[in-house]
Length: 148
Image (cartoon, rainbow, N blue to C red; front, side):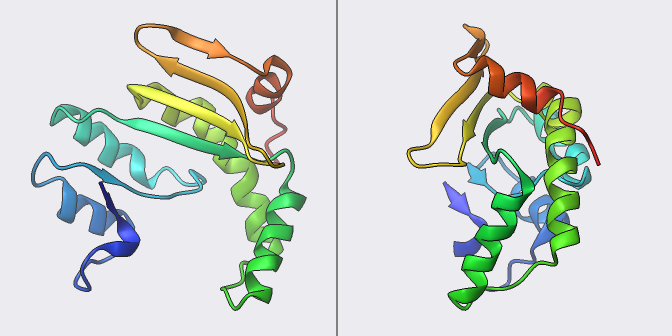
């Protein structure tokens, strides 16, 4: 599987890079996104027409303050910063887009609660088993999130 961070230097990031690099042929690839935008929707729909199977792994956090704290830890370790208002916006939009747009594109999906260690499995979807919910309260919270 190819991960964007290990692709050769000429790779251009973002949706444009994904489109030109991977949609040329059936190769396995993965990418990381907050799902806060809908930029990948058209691309993933195109991938479906090219016989790709879309498998999503989503790591959920119980509140945006956890995301802010993790960014602060990353900054303290020399990583890049993201403004708090951007983190908040991405947190809510990502969950909204997950439920309203991205899950329906997926052949399979898995949602984990990454708020604590160890990570907890929330729900899965496969064509054979349909949706299996392991943490009903958490799954309902994700579906009914207050999209600020």
